[in-house]
Image (tube, rainbow, N blue to C red; front, side, top):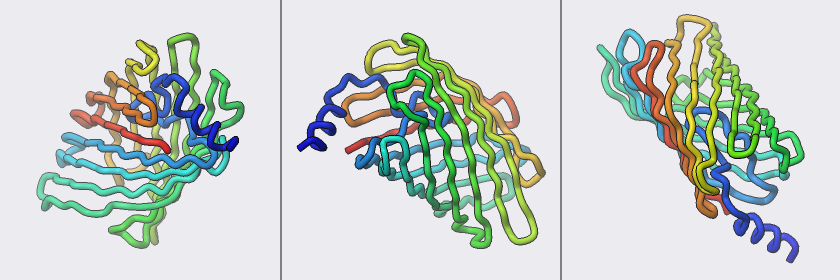
Length: 236
């Protein structure tokens, strides 16, 4: 009975466009204990690097709240990719598991989140990707700011790839359900395995009951033309 009452209050409280407030930056909220969330992201890389790569990815990420501050997600990514002198391809790219931990209390205006993920590459079966990410957002009245930094390490037989993923953003609550803002996101390779890139642009977030949507239009500022992203989720 108590559990049912808590879940009712969760859905009855006014929404504040909160599960994700940007496109590329890490969400600083976690799924409450016992709740299930189905998240989907669609994102593009347009005219990336010297071979003018263009890719569209679909990321499906169910997540369950293990505690009020710890969630477990199982992401699966599909990618369609084209580039100069390369045949177009569409395939399962990778799958994995990740943990996200938000420092308590949940009601705090400052929300630090740590993320640890392990991915299995579906094309290069000997390759494993590890990701460590730290992010924090802070609410001051209607204003929310966020700083995000991530480290990615790909390990394969005989080689390793490392990259940094910094980001920063700010948005303003327009209504209880709507936020508007802007963000900067970059993926910076520390070797020649992949192409570094960076984008900046506006973002929007909207929440209604169990549903939330957040997206960004990233305009290229370094070795890419654009990288838009749309995130959609539903929580039970």
